Image (tube, rainbow, N blue to C red; front, side):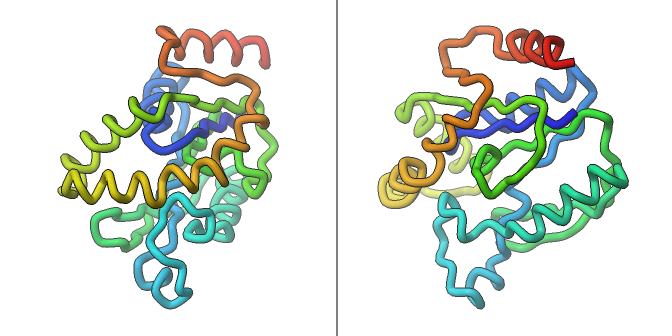
Length: 191
């Protein structure tokens, strides 16, 4: 079974994927691990906007997903957001695989899936989450996060991510109190 969880930045994709994976014994594949490295972005002149699909290594993503779906084992890329480098780690997949990321429902993802989920969370809620996460995890300054939010995140999500909502089987917003239970019911109905 293959489940996709998409939505804009800081909508809760990673958190939901991890909680769901614990309930159903799934393997989570984080699409953030497939960004081009800092060196690759410089060589290809791709810029620094992580909310633009051109900084995402679609070729590496597709080859990794194909391999894990066939062999159940793969050298999974692990991207370091602090320094823009990538390592690889051998991963063996469970029967259920959850792919989560801002591009999960993008037309370029091209995956045969059992369930597509889009997290539709208000911008102000997501900005607060992003401020909390990025100041803590990446030691970024609040004013730089807000500047990036306005200059890159919001325009890119409007252009590239929000249109993906139409590909979802279910749309979940921040008002949903029991998203895991809702998803478990959907999985049961799809089985």
